[in-house]
Image 1 (spheres, helix red, strand yellow):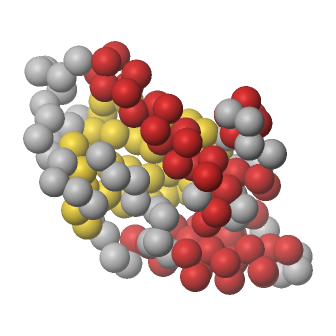
Image 2 (cartoon, one colour; image 1 turned 90 degrees about the vertical axis):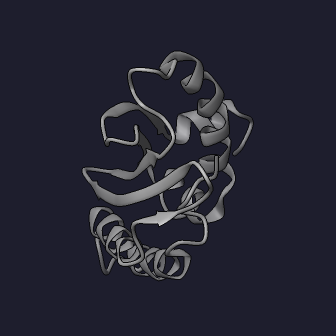
Length: 138
């Protein structure tokens, strides 16, 4: 499964970082600006199994909302799926510059929320700067 957010909105995020660093907008405004820009391109299939539906944010959280198009909540082992996805998602958020530099390093939690094909919530994975430090990234 892929993780959208990488290339999506990277230029907008860089612009928002610049504004934030110059104290022209707040961190929550930066999150909102990035989410609005990304949402203009959504929904979008990012691989054969995963669709990014929307991005939202506020209160120092940037949330990516995914739909697993071939999964139903009644048939999937969410514990096993979460165990597979958590390290991948955490690694992505900690190593993708457009997420790490723009958000994680500034105290923003990046949340990856997953739903089944009928948009029933499965689980969410939160990644913060503490997760990145524990992975050895500084």
